[in-house]
Image (cartoon, rainbow, N blue to C red; front, side):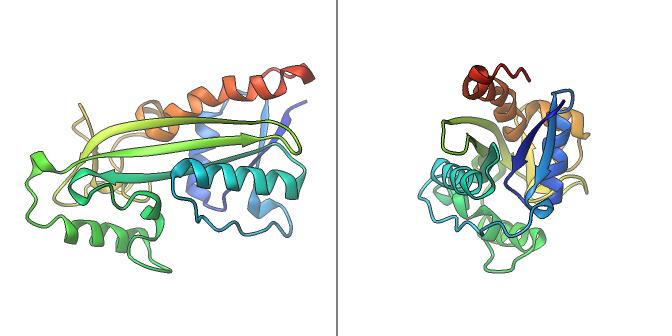
Length: 205
């Protein structure tokens, strides 16, 4: 029987991406929108790791389920690391992906392409209720384009060109993205983290 793993997100696109990467594991993924009355976790940490750990711990204790939480964002060198942990709300409260992309392009106006270096960062935390915690991370280097390209993915994907690629995250197919993306790379390490947490229960992913 598949073991249940709670994904601490209500973002359906992120859930779909996680399902694709974790396909083939003996897991039944559940998201927050499938569970009643889960607390809203304020992402007030100073780092991606702080936020991921807080979400995983809080939701694991509230739900009684093994919980996976991530905090991801875009780090742009020319903006001194912004938007960073504020990536999802870079353009202000209630902003859309399009708003955030427009804000990023506005701040990078006049910055030449060689100086538009950036990377996506993802930190994933897995917490067992009343028990252990593991964190893993993934990074994908690249640069910010002068204009968006593609209509796949979400967030800053249309503006992000991964190093060594000719297509943005919003242009490549999901299988390729899952191999090279920050979240895909972090998830490849999650299996070992889960196993370390659960080996005493004799469960194998």
